[in-house]
Image (cartoon, rainbow, N blue to C red; front, top):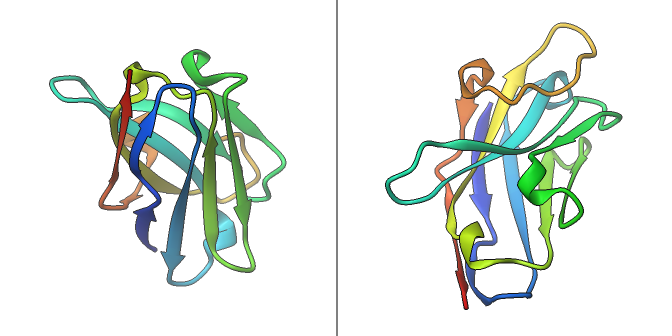
Amino acid sequence: VQLQASGGGLVQAGGSLRLSCTASGRFFSRYNMAWFRQAPGKEREFVSGISRSGGSTDYADFVKGRFAISRDNDKKMVYLQMNSLKPEDTAVYYCAADWVISSTPPSSSTSDYDSWGQGTLVTVSS
């Protein structure tokens, strides 16, 4: 599956953005999906994940209550609604896909993800 992330931009602290990830290829509904982010000089880190059916989600502690992940398997899309943004949320955000053979919760490990989008930059000003 090929992935393309979009929706990043410049926003003031406290504002909102909605990231989108467009997938192409077959069997999208067999992939768990996730968003990761990477700030300058830092490791790539897990933000949020969603199971292939959408029935299971997971969030990093630093975004719980502020971000929401969702997916539309018919449209082959994954979304990340980001609210109450903070300057420390500034990073390049990547969507990623993990082929799973059964219904499992999304992984938070980068090594489990087979396909990656090109990333979209989110900048939060104070």
